[in-house]
Structures are given as C-alpha cells and as structure tokens.
Image (spheres, rainbow, N blue to C red):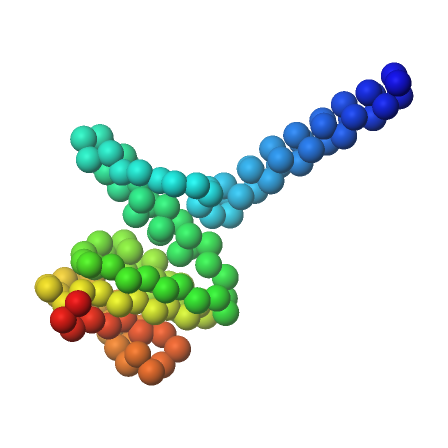
Amino acid sequence: MHRRLTSLLAALALVAALSSAWAATASAAGPTEGPTFNDPTGDDAHQMAIMTKIMKAIDGTPRGATIRIAVFSFTIEEFADKLIRAYHRGVRVRVIVDDHETWPAFTRAKAAIGGDPRRSSFVVHCHGA
C-alpha cells in the first residue's frame, strides 16, 4: 500500500511539473488558451487585450501555416505590420474586411500582401457585407 501511494504521489508530482513546464513554454511561444476579454474602462492594455492576443498568435504562426481573418475594420498599423512580417516569412495570409471604410493600415497591408483572392495570400474588401 505504501509503495502504491508513493508511486501515485511521484506520478502526480511529475504531471504537475510537466504541466507547469508546458504552460511556461506555451506562453512564451504564443497566446494562452481560453477566452480573452477587453475592458473598455481599463488602460490601453486592458482595452486591447483581444487584439494583443491575436497579434501574439500572428507572431507565433510558423512558415507554411495559414492565417485567416475576417474583420469589420482594419485600422491598427501594428496589426498590418505583423501580418506583413508573417507574409514575408512564408505564412499564407488571408484577410477579408468589410468595405464600409478604407483605412491606411488596410491599404498598406493590401499593397504588401496583394489583393487577389485567387492567390494564396490576399487582403480584400468584402463588398456588400
């Protein structure tokens, strides 16, 4: 009985250690799992929590993978920068944006990535969305 309890405790300690190591690696490599919420009454970091998580995921996307994004507005320059860098490192980038208004970040990303949806990477407006 004592031997089984000792083995069980050792196994639990190993699982806890591996879980802790995995969590540290996961957070260093990309965004954490689970829901993320903005706080519109908080500081800039709290107001941008969702976008920060998305941009961290873009940074962690490996060569040969595909990023697919559909958004209403494309206004954040840093977002454009990250998508352009991902495209240049060999990530397929596919972005569809509502055509209610064109912002400089969208225009710059489209110029760098391309606007032909028949290609492997593109940034396009969706007309009549």
